[in-house]
Length: 321
Image (cartoon, rainbow, N blue to C red; front, side, top):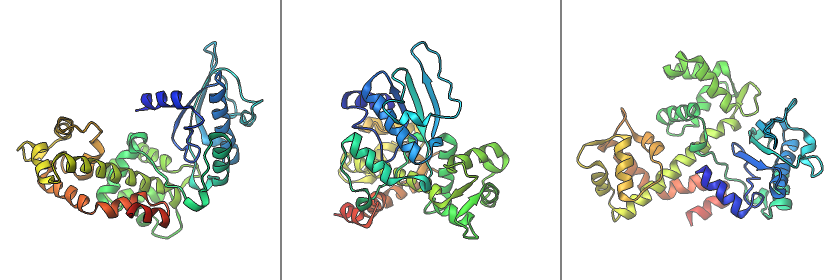
């Protein structure tokens, strides 16, 4: 919950919890009248200055007199210095960066200098992540279309990029969704273009394989949250997922999202199950056959967890251990 996270930041400190290594898509909000928050905002401008200042998007600064600051050419680069950044007002923005534009060295350096982190980024690598709760609905729907069509949703890119160019233009993207019979995107060109823009992180007019990796990051998030849900059911039902089905289903033979959410809460699970539901539902319900898919996932949990958490071969080995 963003409200809870804001409370944690206020208690622990904005600099200590600044997501310097992966700021992408984080909703940043800084009170520039508070020194620590002003420094945190300065750090983000420094990162953008090294990568692309245009990565800072949807910027808004409301001054104490409630008059908005006029950003004529984006966030001023001098805001990346102590002397240059304003000392009052509430600054909000999001950070969007394509993988080709990331400066791992810059992110590591500011994390060490300002946030107190001491990682060796080159050695450990980064387990890049995109939370399903933080993406727009249009991209989430497209993601689940890929999930239903492929064992690994990232395969969409390989099929679309049949000429092996390493990138996909909008024309190629539109042709691919038409080929798969995804009428939702064929009939609504604006929706199709919106999804394309969400994946085209650096606004270059084409989606690279690295940019499409955002779908792979979402796939990791879905698989991990599914394992966490199944782990809860395993504990709650003494390792018997068939019993879990009976307790959740209540003899209905199938479960709607509302039934699953309510039944899961009665068992003591209060996390969101909407994305987990979409993983196996057919026709708006989970059937006994769909539940078998959950059982197969649970049986393969060690391998799945290793794949999800593996940023490098070293991390994969740690996950297995």
